Length: 341
Ligand code: 13P
Ligand code: SF4
Image (cartoon, rainbow, N blue to C red; front, top):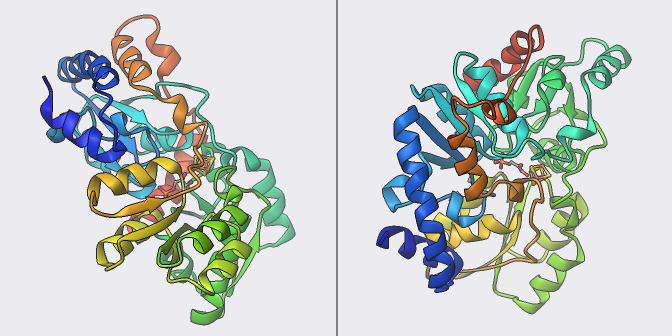
């Protein structure tokens, strides 16, 4: 019996559904064996379901759990032959671009992202000809062929630092308009920078609107945890009357760590609430619970299937591929981001 896993899973979910947990245990054991056999690591994003974001030291399958910047950095540090990516496609692509000699497996090839799908490399080329000489910052939530046309990447965690590293007063930020609007408010108080924005949105975070306002009215003492991708009008209307932050996933984790409050309202992917609950079992995380359908395509069973496929003819189904010259071109803005972080 994997007591460590059961304890962690129960603290993250508040569930004592032992029948369900017991069904997961044989999958976990086989994943661990196959990881050893094939010298593979599992990198897992905070938006995965709880069973996928429990580290091996706590009885789970993950070698590293983190936000998109943490996962990119972890991908540069591993000496494994295989990286199994429990996240979405743009994240797995980034890991591959940083490690083209390794094999990166994504357990479901359909795990996309509304932001990444909102813009192409050709769109960036057109933007650059409309605004010549203005640097283009690509949020990491873009595909390789889009990154390939950009000057630098950023994640939610380092966007401000990356933007400030440019002397230019104008910057093009793609593709999230809401994150761009939230960053612009911050820049207006700290810098003289102006952002030119694209029209993409995160289909999860754009849904935090009156649902968050209602939760603040129902829970007057709770502090707000809002991701950069939440619409600016929600950020403005709720943070005006309530304590809290708008920021990155890691800002949210740090805020909770340093806050004395016992109650928080989360405006981010629902399973980040489980991550937080696992870290701070004595605190309350209230959320409208909006899930990313792309992230939820990744399951424990599919992760096992991806590992079972290694050295078989089905491995190709899971394998991330980025062809030249896109690979080398997309490496430049990602590497520049890592050097600036
Ligand atoms: P982070 O950079 O905060 O991990 O965000 C990833 C993401 O997909 C946000 O919706
Ligand atoms: Fe994309 Fe939003 Fe899902 Fe993140 S939560 S992967 S930004 S759709």
